[in-house]
Length: 166
Image 1 (cartoon, rainbow, N blue to C red):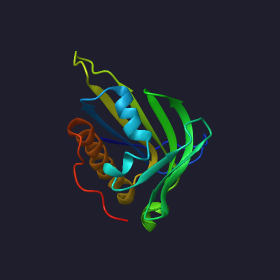
Image 2: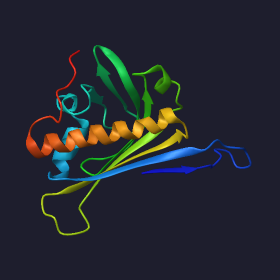
Image 3: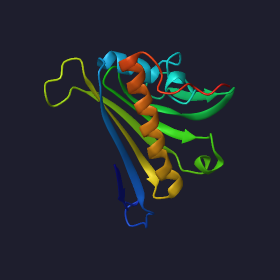
């Protein structure tokens, strides 16, 4: 789901429309298992199109994803509640059009489902601060694929698709 709004960063200024992308899914896994998959670089390549994560999981710490020896995403860790919530800034470099997007933020939240479903974690991903452009809109389909891959990996023990080779 994408929500478009126009809110200036400075009161009284004119602002370009920005979007908030929200992807939510239920995963048959514990919050600790989902957290581990989100933050452990030995796991991320299996669902994140081959990208390997490196996190300093402290507020103000840095993180990055690498692929083929190069950096494809980087940012700063803003908020960390292990097993519950991770907020980072987001800068993508895997494509020149993506690299032109302004820095944005991504928040992953892990919660229990509203109805009784033992052993299930609800993963919510909110990507905010993106311009209302086709390039930014394309990131949402990327998130759907990546998070579906994470779900498949945790529920079946195998990747949804084979990771690309470096």
